[in-house]
Image (cartoon, rainbow, N blue to C red):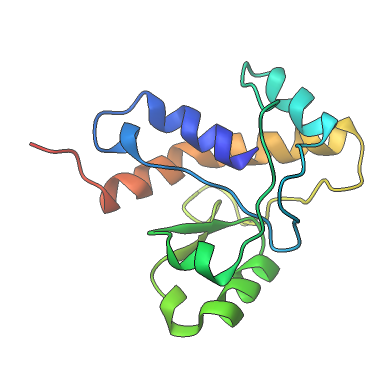
Length: 144
């Protein structure tokens, strides 16, 4: 869900933001699995199609290719730091850490839950998008 939400938000921005590649990967994910039906339904409610999504595992190689890495939870941060060590510094952040109006920077993992859990996770991500895009703009300023 995060990949499509961020990609959707960036698509309306000026270059180079609307040209950035957004890819998602899971710490405990396998490769090639479709999105859960609850993920598909949660994004469909906000007009985003997730039917063609296939899961990707967050391998060291995948992570090293990323300019920026946004994690959902502190445990995800810890896992990436474990795999990348010093190479993660300055590139890894929580998706919600740029929000000024909340002390809850964790995005709940809906895995195994019902539609309400997936909706809560989607809404937690959507709430983070404006501050996340503002941060990304500082890393990839528009051409003048």
